[in-house]
Length: 300
Ligand code: GLY
Image (cartoon, rainbow, N blue to C red; front, side):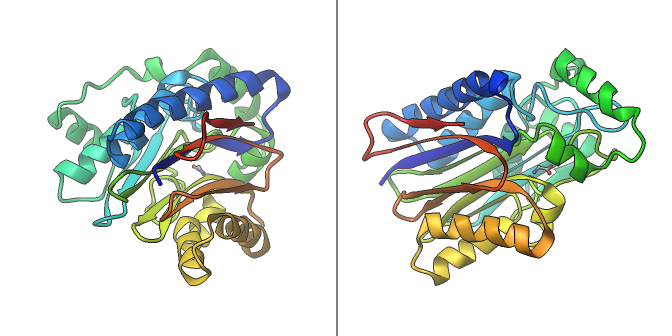
């Protein structure tokens, strides 16, 4: 079954921002579904769905991302497809509006998996991408939020995650050929130490796909997710327990809490295109569409 699920972050999304999150997720799933339902590939659907959210300005990904402790954006992303385990990832780039596209180019056009910082930006240019100005990515909302926390002593990334937006975006799709693709993109945690890299660009932590089993994208406190290799842990649970995506999603969020006192959310598809999702934050923005549905389900 062809299907697609996207998320727009798990955190305490305030009522005033519900509409923007719903609209952003709806646009992303609409874009990706248009590709999948007309016979397009899971890789195209995931990249294009995430590009919508990176450009939106609502989410902590691409335009509108959180600022680090020095007042700069540093963006991370990963993409993986489950047929061949091909993957690509990028971390700590400052002048790339669409890190998911750069991650895809690294997957498809380089011999490497993860490029960071200036080297990643150099690769982007050599692969035909145009770098943006850092100021194109910084929104006044984020500058004001950063000012409000940057001056405080004792401010930590984990504290930032529990109190402030954590809007990492992601998508998982399965296409007509049964190929599964996962992508995740983020600006990381608010006021993070410069150079800090979270779970999103780390294969197995923020993204994992394996044909015949499923795909997972995560959102939340990245340090906790790295410790338990959350995305791959969920895939392993699916493989060993009947490939039920909802049980595997619940299991992942449960052990995130029990083992490392972490909070966040996950979206999951299994090899049949069945959907699972779970979160331990007050809210998670997500949307999905499958061949069995007449219209997408959009939730915040
Ligand atoms: N989950 C996103 C991050 O911690 O960077």
